[in-house]
Image (cartoon, rainbow, N blue to C red; front, side):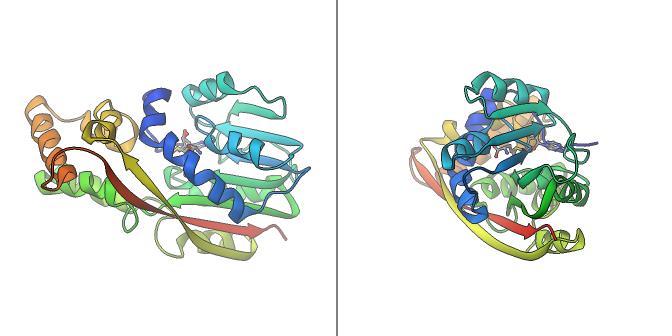
Length: 266
Ligand SMILES: C[S@@+](CC[C@H](N)C(=O)[O-])C[C@H]1O[C@@H](n2cnc3c(N)ncnc32)[C@H](O)[C@@H]1O
């Protein structure tokens, strides 16, 4: 298996995560410090949140973007109007570029969905020139996503399959403190720095929060789709109750922390 990310449809992804990765992208770009004239690779571009933010952030000469999902690649190509951006379907663990092609390779919210995440870091290192930068950011599902823990902890209290989902979700690759930094060092990157980036996810209502998961998007949507009708009704009601937290339905705002790491190719 090359990708652990469950793709349902591009519009669902936007509501589940794309709208939030668009908020996170400028913080990640600031951390990576892109500069005019550079060639950048966006690994796991999804629907293009980082790709299009990069195009706005600096006068880059080229932005290459790859993703494993043909659904997301098609959507990112459909949205693109910038001739500097080239998008194609590819695997992060076998990048279709020559050694030293790019000034920087960046992966936003991708490595935790790559089963062989270390291999993806090695590939990013290979395609970046000496002195260039490899960088990645992943969510801290265990300690940094209270909005998603609402669902995860609720389903874990309801069933054994929910408990197993929580175990998998909280310990995806690269999410533990220092884990990504260690992987970068193991792949020979130098001057490796790990930090945390924070955005808030602001929902209008329970339906705004729940609709993409209920429709089957992402790893939590994949779990919900396995439930029978009675389990599903029970889960929907319990997660709604947890979201509301004793108040009428309406807006809720959650802090979300991502680990971000960057290192230099020697
Ligand atoms: C949470 S999405 C992030 C997408 C985008 N970077 C963003 O921030 O919105 C995770 C992405 O990683 C991609 N992905 C997972 N494994 C991959 C692999 N082995 N090679 C390329 N892309 C992969 C998925 O297809 C998906 O688009």
